[in-house]
Amino acid sequence: MKILFVCLGNICRSPAAEEIMRQTLKGAGLEREVEVDSAGTYGGHRGELPDARMRAAAARRGYRLTHRSRQLCEEDFTRFDRIVVMDDMNYETVHRMAPSRALADKIERMRDRLSPSKFPDRTYIPDPYYEGAEGFELVLDMLEDACVNLLEDIGR
Ligand code: 4NP
Image 1 (tube, rainbow, N blue to C red):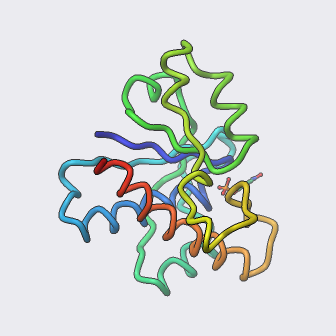
Image 2: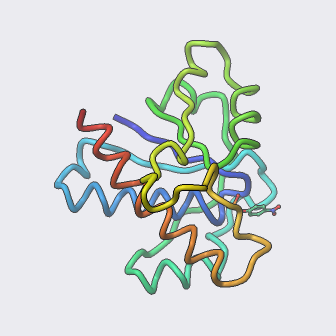
Image 3: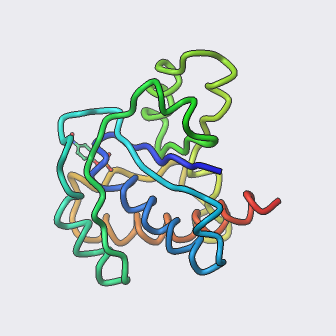
């Protein structure tokens, strides 16, 4: 099983989701069964480490973010089993890039994995890039919650 997380820049949300998912899998002893990666629909940050604010916020929770930003490519649609996007704009962009309808069926929204009891009004994972520090903490809270539920869904 291979999971790809996708956001816009691949320097805030999706690289954090990737590492949180990796640690969540590790906690369940499943890190060898499930491979995770991340990519962005926008390639302007390619080669960069995640945003310093996200790296600092993630490090405080024990996640070391070392991913290098890359842009989503057509091959990702065959290489990965599940493509998990952070917001509706990502969804539209990734959907348009899908080489076929069958491959587009691999696209899903991270918000569908949020626990309704914890995040009742959230319809997407907000982009923290233009926000203050609280934005990063909120995104990490949401991703930690969604990754646990994603793991549960995989197990089903
Ligand atoms: P991300 O955040 O999609 O969570 O990585 C962003 C990072 C960079 C930009 C936008 C969003 N940008 O426009 O450069």
